[in-house]
Every structure is written in C-alpha cells, then in structure tokens.
Length: 203
Ligand code: GRF
Image (cartoon, rainbow, N blue to C red; front, side, top):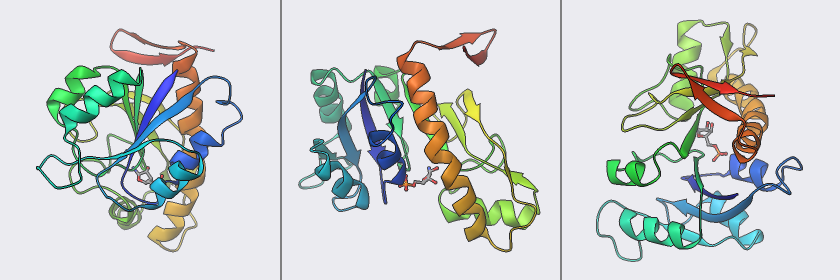
C-alpha cells in the first residue's frame, strides 16, 4: 500500500513510519507533503529518497496547489493519506477525493483537547492546566473539520506525576510512534472496518 504523509515540522512520526519493521513489507511512503518549504520532515524524506512536495491554499511561488497535489498522488497510486503534524486544514475537495482514506494523529484523547488552535504544545498545556491524570494519542479519520472524524485508535498514558506540559508531550510522543505505524499496518491488512458507526480493529 502506498502512503503520502503530510507534515509541517520535525517529522518524528514520519521517521517512525519509515523505520517501522512492522510496516517494512506492507507499505511504501510514496510522497511527503508539507506546507513549509524547509522542515525536519523533508530532511528525513530526502534521506530515504522520498519525493517531497510543498503545498499552499494560496497561489505561492514554488508551492503546489491542493488540486496539483491530488493529481500527483493519484499518479503515484497513493491509497492512504497520513496527517502527521500537518497544521493546515485540509480543503474539502481534497477530503472528498480521498474520502475515508485520510487519517490524522492528534496528541491527546479526543474528543477532549481538540479543535482549532489545539496543536503542538498548546494541546499539552491545556491538558496540564486541566489537571487531567491521563492523556495519550488519538488516530482518527478526517472529515471536513478539525479533529472531529471517527476515532480509530487511542492509547492512554499516565500523566499523574508530570510537572510540566513538555513532560506530557514527551510521554505522548513515545506512544504516538507506536500507535501510528500500528494503525497504518492494520489499514494495509484490511483489518479496520466500520460497523454501526464505530470503527473496529480486527485481530
Ligand atoms: C505530533 O505530536 C502529532 O501528534 C501532532 O503534531 C506532532 C508532530 O510531531 N499532530 P512530528 O513532526 O511527527 O515529530
């Protein structure tokens, strides 16, 4: 199965995907797309000779538009889109083109601590301020809004003893690097189904 990974920054989830033993014979990252022309994720992509694209909703020099990216991904036979730290809202037309085949990783337990502006350290600050005792990543399907698509998988992380939001970020990120390749592998195996509006992962 061919994937495209959308990123905006460091790319540690991208690295977890390309280095995953579990995914080695199942998936190929065929493209990395970013809204930034320089980011850590592009350096990782280059190291693995993965084609990179920059995308913008506005007509910016050197950037592709979403329709151009759609065409390129279709040409590459990309079957799954993975949003791994992509900070821009995906336009509705793009979602429609890949409906049901776009997943996102969010660094908190949705439906809490999601929505517009809830990204990166902002999420962990809100979790810390709430005095919540558990947090953890959520992998979900994408619909036309922020963080509202059906939840595929979540893992909880004990944060009862943390002293700052950065500690939560670190603990959650470690688990992100496990859960995202796990879900991608299950999708590649055809083991993720929707029944009565719930997403179920088959053994
Ligand atoms: C991760 O915490 C992810 O959950 C969030 O953005 C961060 C991206 O980190 N959506 P990285 O670029 O994969 O290192």
